[in-house]
Structures are given as C-alpha cells and as structure tokens.
Length: 347
Picture 1: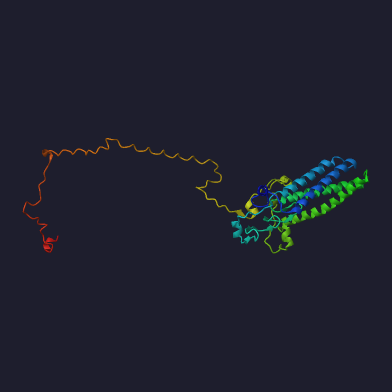
Picture 2: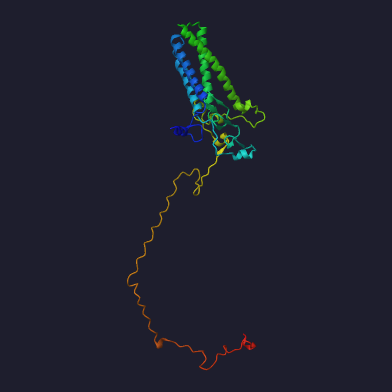
C-alpha cells in the first residue's frame, strides 16, 4: 500500500499527483491557515447577525475566503516546475552563451534561474522560495496561484478591518464580552495577516519586475547574475485577463522557452514522419499475396523408366552431301605435316 501511495502521490518524477509529504511542519502550517480562515468566517457571521454588521456582508466575505482557500489548494498541489532528469538545454540558450549548469544533487541539467529544493528534493524552474504555509515551492507553474492567494487574503483582511472600524466609528456595542473578545482576536489576526501577506505580495511583484527571486536576492546575486524581468504572460499565461483572477491552470505560448529546457526523447521513428497538420489516417497496407500451392506428386507415367523413342534417320533423298575436303587414304594433310621450324610453315 505504501508503494502504491508513493507511486501515485509525491514529489518524485514518477508521481501522478504532486503532493509534498516530506515536510511535516509545512503540513501543520497549511492546516493552521485553514483554521484561521474559518475562524474569521465564523466571527464575521456571528457579529454580522448579532452586532449589526449586516447580513449582506456574509456572502461577500465567504466568497473572498473561498477564493483564497481554493488558490491555496492550487498552490499546494500544483507542480511548481520540477525539472525532469532527462532535461536538455535549449539550442537558443546554448547559442546565446548562457552557461550550462549541472545540479550536484540531481546530477542533471539545471536551467537558468532554477534552484534545488532540499525539502521537495527537486530542481524547480524560477524557484522563488519554499513556502511552509503552502507546503510547496513557489515556482514558474504555481506563482500565479500563490499571488491570487495573497491577493484574496489581502482583500479579506482589509474587509474585516473595515467592518470592525465601521462598528467602532458608529459606537456599536456588542451584546456580550465573548462577542467583544472574538472581534478583538479578529482585529489582531487581520492586522498581522495583512502585514505579512502584503510583504509577500511586494516580494512577488519585485521578483517579476526585476527577475530576481527571493533566494537570489538573499544570496545577493542580483546585480551580478543574468537576470531579466519576467513577462507577465509567463506568470499568468495566455488566457484573457479576466481569467487572471481565477486559479486556473497556466497555459504558455512557448512552454520550452518559459521552462528553459527540452526533454530528450530516445524513440526511433519506424518510417517517414507525417507533417504536423496531417491528421489523416495512414493508407491501409496492401495484403500479402497468398502462398503458392504445393507441387503435385509425380504421376506413375512420369516415373516410367522406359527411354524415349529414337527418331528415325532421314531419308537419303532429303540429305544433301557436301564435297569432302578430307585427304584420301594414304595421303597426309599438308597442314599437319608442316614442320614447325620451317619458316614457310608459319603463317
């Protein structure tokens, strides 16, 4: 059962679903994030009902919480851009003079701006950092989902602070001390969340604009490295801009350019390759000719040992006799009697 679970879910290359099972603290912190979000929902609903916030605030706040949690799940269970072991550098990168780097832990090609995560045990394309709240690395494939989580969490925290500030300015009193304690705790959680998440959003925007991720900035590689701003289309994909606000899978115009590698294939084509746009079925193969019938056994007549009849000699009347040039009896052929040493005998 453990072998089947490892084959289906994990961070190794053969896993069908991406899931980090190597970081126990990350699993705890990602669960705490859900607890804090659900706590804020309960407080908003309770205070909206008994504290005069207005019940119409509940659906909007729930929508923000739902989008934040869905974005968190997409960030957690999306492959951040793990480099396969058979990755090869692009030809355009080799021609541009970009050095080819081999990861000392994976013993495989590491594309530019990639880093090896010791927790995920994989090299991640455009890795920014490993986030324990997401229990995953933040890389090229899930940076959009992470930024959406930050965005909806910021709006949610601002909305909760706005509700609390409105009640305070209106002089609204809560019906019980427990209700006042819940609001005070929500105030503290919202302020701390807003400060932390806003800082993370600033780091993500800075990494996109400058091309320098959090790891490279902490290692002070920015001014000396080969960095360039990351196009927004490489983060959010080629979908229309309203889709940028939804945690959908990212679609790239040029996947290999964004990832910085190509995968080597070792398959040998059995024949000529059809054009890419030729989707017609191949013509049917010609049927093989039927096998030849076996030879019939010889008949008894063919096996008769009697020799064939000798044809009769021709009639004398039909035979023409040519004059003989042979010498008569007792005469010698002058050609045969010629002396080979006689000069006259040599023609």
